[in-house]
Length: 159
Length: 208
Image (cartoon, rainbow over all chains, first blue to last red; front, side):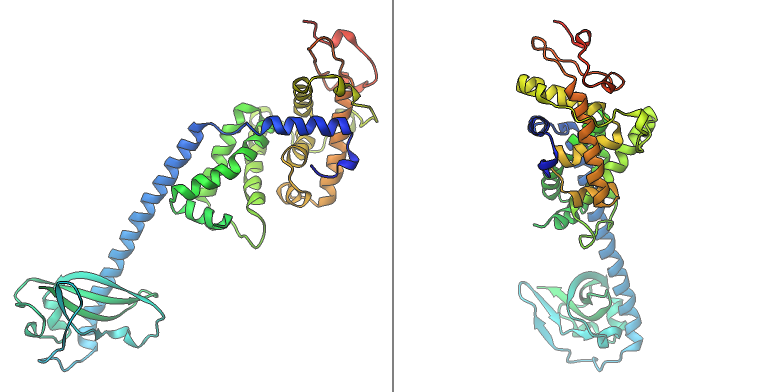
């Protein structure tokens, strides 16, 4: 307690006793339960928002890939290098996209399933992609910078 | 983890972070609210305060104040609203004729009471203070909040906190000085009765 020099000692002692007595007092469990429900609800909301963000990024990426098809030219009619990504899959090398020149300090790889027609739009022949090239869809790993811009893409086939 | 980190994680839905935050602050906020609004108001104020905290994304700036100041600032806002809604209690400094003067009375009578009696007597005396004075006693004397924090919560200069506390303690002393222990029963006078703190009035003491 503060500045006890200005307070009657009996009053100070009584206030201290009241404060000690009160330390047992607190909000009911019902309040805690209701508030925890609110926290859970916010957690679910944030997770939904996260999924929405990923989907929005994915949509952006698909658009970027499509646009990049006619903004970036690559001599890829054949001989596209194939690399192992580790695990049970094979992938092409990364192909730079429209925003490849924008500096980035960190990024994430977002895996998408895209139509095989995207291959043609970026100038890749189906034969250049691991696998049989006849599937309607293909997996794509897109490198997205911290600013949400897609920098590069590679195509993946599970073995 | 720092308090602002706890707050941020709680807002994102981290139950463990919220539980820790709640455990640290619910008690002091409850007790402040219960002294200001009555025990039935304590739960309401705690719930509304933490809901506001969870929903006010980004309103806490650690560089501008402590989390205690932030939380109590919200709680006080809710308390003032509750008081205004429930009893139209004016949250202002009472005029001199609305309260007892801070007579230099003695509270030595408290020494003759048991601890439980003294606690009850002081609780009742605190309750009988006008809200304007009660909250500074609750914050500084009961919650042991330092004057700088109290000044931030009350949005007034530290000097005002000191003077208000001095006045409030004087009022408490006056109210408690008129107590008389009879058996194990004590009743505090009403504010009007306490205007004559030195006068002994045996008929105002409950007889068991």
